[in-house]
Length: 502
View 1 (cartoon, rainbow, N blue to C red):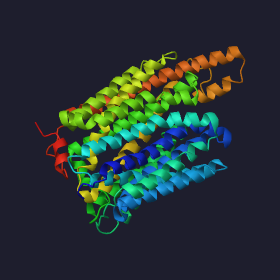
View 2 (cartoon, rainbow, N blue to C red; view 1 turned 90 degrees about the vertical axis):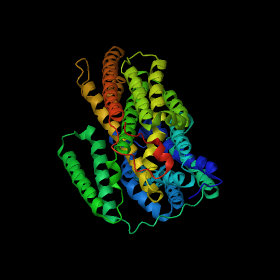
View 3 (cartoon, rainbow, N blue to C red; view 1 turned 30 degrees about the vertical axis):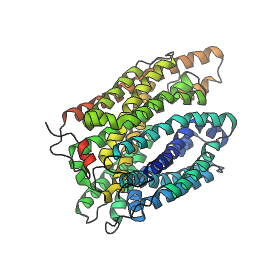
View 4 (cartoon, helix red, strand yellow; view 1 turned 135 degrees about the vertical axis):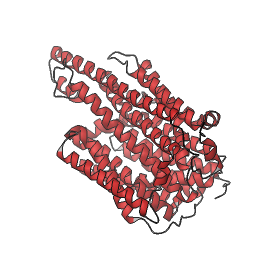
């Protein structure tokens, strides 16, 4: 498709849909304590209220991208927004944790259609020369969602119940739908043969089992029988999916793209930076609210340095990648993430807020400059008819990276915390230790809290060091592994971003 006269206005609308989806999860994180009280939800319930969305979203992405290409990306976007907004409204009316879990799954299904559609439309309505700027603006929108989500959630919960975390999506989605109808052009449907039903079943089941294994492993153990069975089944299904995709006449995913080193390194870099982001912010949320005793609103403000830095560098990443090339832009972004993580690894119980803000801000700078170039490398390296598939791959990579970050770094922190010999209540995690201390005499409570806070902070520092080590390895791989040949770019802009062999 040639450039569209309303393409920049359409980009603003597409970015708004991304804000709506990212806003929901960040608002929900601040609402979990209120949910526990309002719905009498257990810790397991709260985990599933959060994870039901992630599980369905990640599992359905590849299939949603393929269906979106056949239906038309604009139709997929409208349908996904309608399902997401409707699910939010009904979720707000839930009376039990089980109802809320079910509607969170519905919201995840809607979001799975939204994410690939936005990237596919951007690829189709912008010329190759303008796509880097468009992708940079789209990436900056993710920073805006992270920026306003915790603050919005904290402000809502100061005055309203937990349901406000879901009602907020309804007017936002309604406005986005009206704007899509008016400003976003229809993108022609892609005719690529019959739908790969077997590939869809294999990919959905494999991703679903893998995500559920990672989500549940910290609570039931990494070596549990059920977890091992899930992991084994996911591996078998993944192998089956790869074999089938190599044989299918109309494959769901073009696996040959991963044979290109530049494409593969861009994908891995994106996964690693989301691994670092989700894992680090998950632990910092507990640190700010429990160790420092901040309210949800103030703790939400703690994400602002990260989000502002990310949005700023996302908006300017097109210029930076033009000067440095994608490879060195990714190396610089990963290096900044390492610096931020090393700063966070020195956090203590009484560390000043500005020091924590510095670490998260530097991570945000690195992530912001990476997202657009890496996403463009993934989505811009395929022919236009595969843009929805590439958008789905982009989202799957990010989602799996984030899920693994929470699980792996969460396990590192949990193991280090429980292994601290100074703990007074070694069988209780940090939230449970704080809850138990609330019922103790002041002297005993002080002793329990001091030991628990010190143990958690030391464990969190270890998690930051592990994340920094992974980011260092990724930076070295991007810096020193050269592509054997130019990437299979679909347009001149993508080709210009690919580093050539020395």
